[in-house]
Length: 305
View 1 (tube, helix red, strand yellow):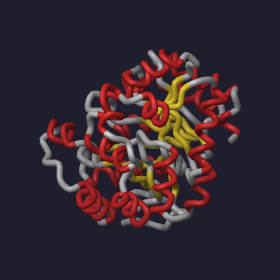
View 2: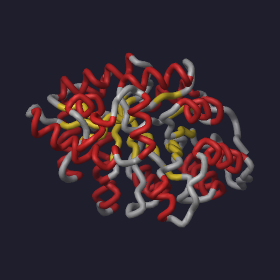
View 3: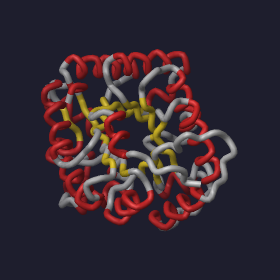
View 4: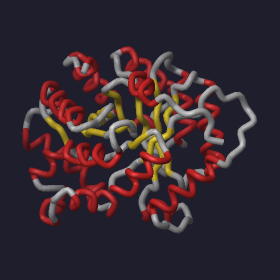
């Protein structure tokens, strides 16, 4: 059952304006992750988003490790694939985490990508239809345990139809690999109330050639996936921009690079465009380097935005 409605305004306050997005922690030991999550909390970041990959920790189990190591930090899946667990497992797992950790868990859901879905043995269907049916099944799930409040749901929405579904059937949207221009368009589709939490990749490096090289290594994977490429084309980028890891202009639009002050300006651009919360993903060689980057950003006062 859906349960009581969620106070989205209160949820926005609890999440804060700036969070952290990371997928590399999943490859580390649980002991390291616990220490990292506790430090991220101590730096003043109020929400930690964790990605899910076929070779990493299962998203809800992973979230439990991080929630158990922190006191106030919100933890969100960014995202949990609807093909990775059936709707009953997702609903019951999210309910268990919501109750056990005082409402600190956020369930980010996404339709993933055709090659990844096929590798799991599923047929990739129309994304909006598949997501709507999944949410229907979640809402039909009976849960026997105590549940003061179900976990908030956010959809990994990029284009208008999925954004509309996020406004209608979830607490909002968690777009990934986007620009402030996309944030403005997403807000226009969502309307004023739903939560909008875009991810923003960052490179703490002031050398243009080196920073863009780091960004292109990251971007090449996503530019090869139709969902992301089509979204960028909708924003006006052409095939020449998407080739070879991205044109300089596209790299600069998708990945914020430079000193902490430059990163803060990009965060402000998303907030000014209608974001409620921006999830920073620092690109670094190791998770320990990633923590160094977060320390620099926290010192640069990004957490006070």
